[in-house]
Length: 255
Image (cartoon, rainbow, N blue to C red; front, top):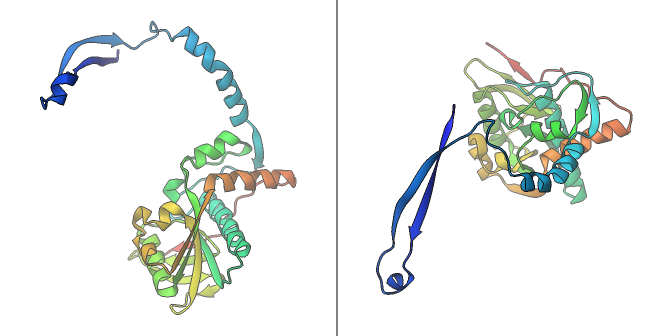
């Protein structure tokens, strides 16, 4: 049986003494063991107060927002779910640039595999599934950087044995470096400028992507990636479409 110790601490604070410069003292007055088991009942008034909100939350979170033809997972070096999220982030990033009338050339997206915490289930996809897939409030971010810096990004992805990509691909060599890097259908050019769409976590140096701190421009938004996932799934359903995993390789591993 597990037991938790609840220590009741009495803080002795003599206000008049404090005002005169005397220090306060703290001591443990008493403590007791309380067994946490089936015999410990909840407060009935608190349960009654919370129940309507819990019922409403359960109803909302169990809403079916779409359908998937197969289970999708986020995996290394890549997975069908990380590729899907990458594509969602990519399309949203393009929309941001277009809304702000920003001229751009080659573009791509990057999502970190470990930020995707649950699979997307086959069949009905519920709102709660989206929250489990992306439990963090990471926001869409657009980063402009030159080709030399982008090569560092790909080498770091290779060092991490892969991440989720969109509109880009590369060969992961045995020495954990990136080769044959293709962005927007063209070979990476060190002299060209690129826009990369990702999360604010990655753009701020998360998962040791510190090279983004040397980027030319960073556009931050307040659009959560989770909301983009939900909107995409709902849109597909509204058009009578079922989510289908993209199994085309974006990272080719050479062992």
